[in-house]
Amino acid sequence: MKWSDLPEPVLLQRSFLFGITGIVLGALSILNSNWNYVQAPMGPLNGVSLLLQFAGLGLAILVLKKRKLSKENKERSQMMILILGVALLFFIFSL
Image: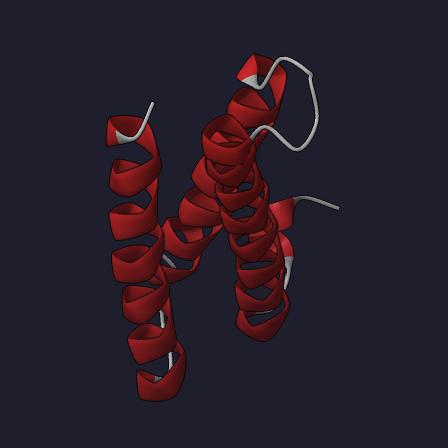
């Protein structure tokens, strides 16, 4: 089954999960870079964080491109795109 065939609430839920996981990993990376809790390279963690945020953003855009979208799902998708876009820009500029 393709992801585009899934119902909108499932795609929005997955978008949220990918996005929040990416944001948490990015925040952990920034905190570790500033306070050095763990002596480990943060490059791979930053990459995974950005990848998850891009995946969440892509799923939210996929929902928005569907036809016959309810107003509630359209608003949720737009809000998810806005939040993930701002978070993605923040983590890109913080590198």
